[in-house]
Image (cartoon, rainbow, N blue to C red; front, side):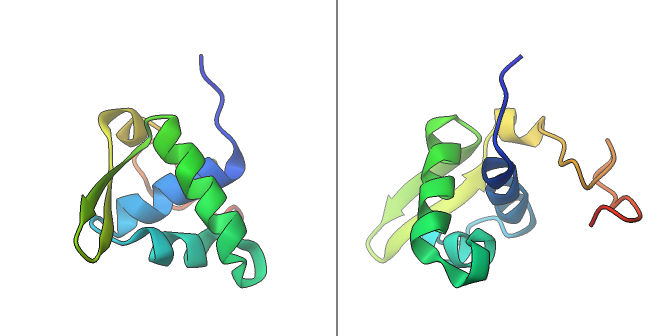
Length: 88
């Protein structure tokens, strides 16, 4: 079983909730204290791990979750994707 880091999971969760979002939007959302550099690093690791697919368009990248990423369950959500009390 492959292990994924917290930020890779956070990036995948963000893209799952916002399909077609840009790398910048995902990086801003998951980077601690607005750290875009850290957010980009996490998004790129998720792309490299095959959790997120990035498609380049003239105005930037569009992100979608892959089949592998869809099978990933967030630690703050149950198997059906519903938020778990106290973990959100």
